[in-house]
Length: 234
Image 1 (cartoon, one colour):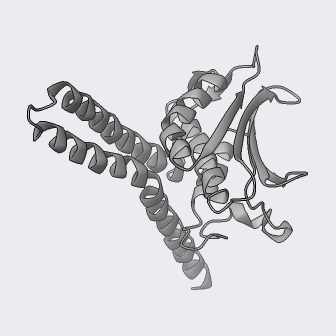
Image 2 (cartoon, one colour; image 1 turned 30 degrees about the vertical axis):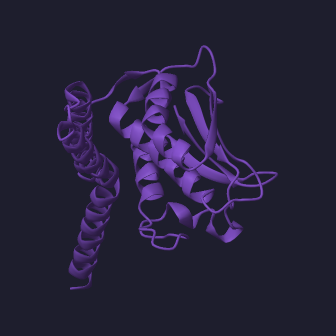
């Protein structure tokens, strides 16, 4: 019986993590769909209607819906321990795409982003969707860590470089509230959060994805304000 209870508990934990992960990851594309649909309606109800603007918002709505579908499929593959579609990737290109998706939120939050992408970066093999999820989540965490900062500029630096021993490394550095020493290891645990209203799932997803790529994810406090979260893919 104890063994059966352990198996059952593990299954329930996995189900909770998967459910929380899907809720966490699809929230933004769903919000984008609602915003785009509302904007489209407003443009069509204008006098005269802004047909071209409405057409563009429909394209963005389709993009966000496809993004939500891709994320769900990717998470199912991750938690089912299935191989997601792997391809040879330029991590710089993946980073640019993730930054572009987060740019509106950074601008709205008064965040200045600096990109320092290394030339001649070694290629990595993996899932484009999953690695974009990792970078996007790290950027969102950085934005949230700086949301209440008023005594200094809100800066994010996204940096890539060759990883020691081969592969590539990416880091996201912010000037936010930082990470307490006792939280440095636990922040990657499922359902552990230091944020009011947080789900404690974003960094767990990041860690799971990076591990599934044979890499590692870690965090460190900055010498000044804020923290840096990095991952390396071999």
